[in-house]
Amino acid sequence: MLFFDDVYRTNAHTPGIAAHAYMFDHRLPDSIVYRPMPRQELESLLGSIGLESMFHERLLDALYLALEAFLFGSGPDTEV
Image (cartoon, rainbow, N blue to C red; front, side, top):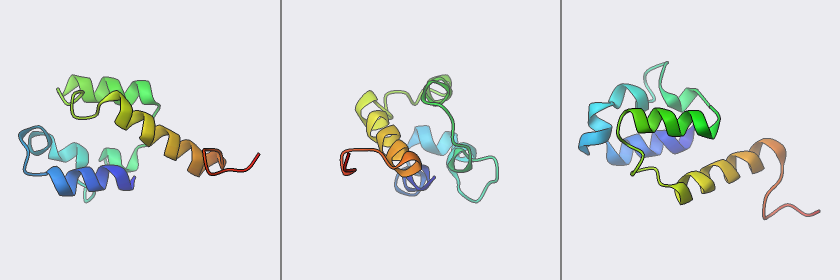
C-alpha cells in the first residue's frame, strides 16, 4: 500500500519507525505495505509496537475511507 511506503520513506529516521523498519520497508515481502488488513487488526498491530499515537483516529479514518472508495467505488466523489 502506497500509504505505508510513504510513511516509511518520510519517517524512517524517527525512533518508532526505525525500530520497526522490518514492518514498513517496501523491500521486504512481509511488510504491511503488502498486507491489507481490517482497521481493528491494524490498530492492534500499531498499538503492540507503540505507534498508535503516530497513526491517530483521523488519519486512519482518511486511510480507510480512501481504501473503501478505491475498492468499492464509493466515497465523497462518487455520484449516487
